[in-house]
Length: 304
Image (cartoon, rainbow, N blue to C red):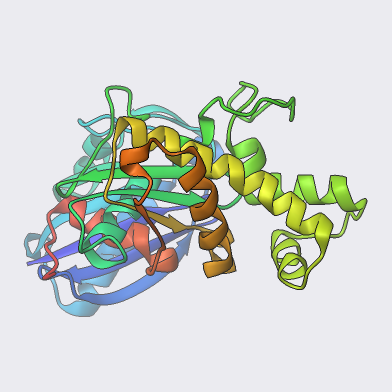
């Protein structure tokens, strides 16, 4: 039997065909057509699967399941509670996609799917409990306990970017609140702080880290400010979840051990004492994590 892992992004949709043991046979990307409230997205994925099946000589009956990761809150029954980036309102994606394809499908939040991928195939595979944190334009996360993602009753578990812990007024978050962690700890937040301190408007997140590594005091200050808040967020999560490991991914994680060392130092200062030695490590699957996680959600099993 075979499985598809689908990671739906705002620009492209990553599609992976997997054997039931978790081996990836083929990966491809198709554009995310968001026009007309995203009504073409699911049919485009269904068309891709049909054509890919023909290429591999597979029948619909050979596909045991399809997992889809979406950028929004998802309930356990596959209902997506708005995906603003895709133009969707409240829709039962699992039901709609199964109707389109005749194949069993399951749906999860994209950050949770990336967490599931890292848990089974990446840096979290040797642990029973893991919190995945992705740092890019925003800050997202996913909690995996005994191999299952924790969704929460509203599908909003581990929305770490919206922890209301920032004391300073750093403007209104995209969610409508103020004081959200991602306002300072995301790539956007890091750049904003660095530009404020250096009076340079041409900086990117990579620039800030490169300059900090080279000894630039203003960029070091910006990174310490942002990552100290990230560490405080992790310390808050530890008080509720107490995971074995934090896995850090997303574009900002390309800063590597430099980032991990700073976050770990601040974390030890803020964490409740039983959790101070919780490991913080880099993710290892990169942009493939969500695709793997979606396949595992659908029922695909990897051999750890």
